[in-house]
Length: 199
Ligand code: FE
Image 1 (cartoon, rainbow, N blue to C red):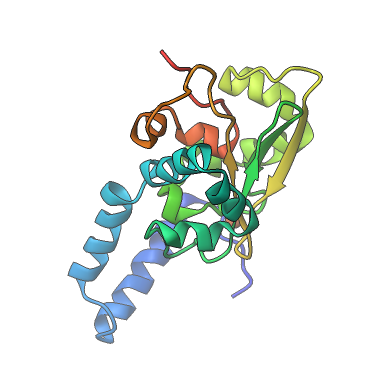
Image 2 (cartoon, helix red, strand yellow):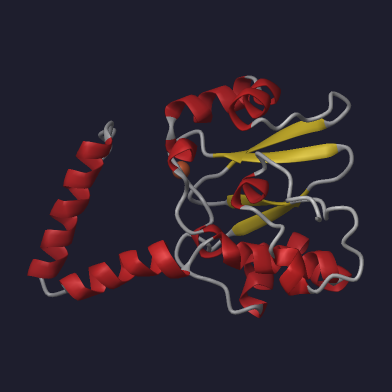
């Protein structure tokens, strides 16, 4: 099975074939497949990651645990699952902007972010982000990172899935975790944008 799958159509056909075999062998039912898709489309999404980030912003001890072992820290909030067995959270600072890409395919921390956006899977994003990150962030995402700031690119894989702890927006002192979570965007956790500003 070392042939390279090239198009979304080929991937879809392969998934369909696998699904049929599993159902035929009684290992899965169509209802189970539908339910799984529903879970990742409607229940698991960046709102879960936002909850984790908001807690890290509010609780320094939790933040330390998150940076030490993101998988375990997420479990404390009841967040875990497929494609999140080994997650690493990277903290943005005044000096460093972390940005995540999967150069090989589309590895992404599902339990905290749901399914990846389409652009994350595009060959263009995957290759250009490595070569000219500052330019891609500015041109494709309207996100200008100051020249004095280093941009560090992390290549997610099936072994290790990275995501970003964005900087806490100014003017949010005293905010509750629920309020803070509203400011955390999917893009800020991929590292292609900031968290929303306090309004
Ligand atoms: Fe991948």
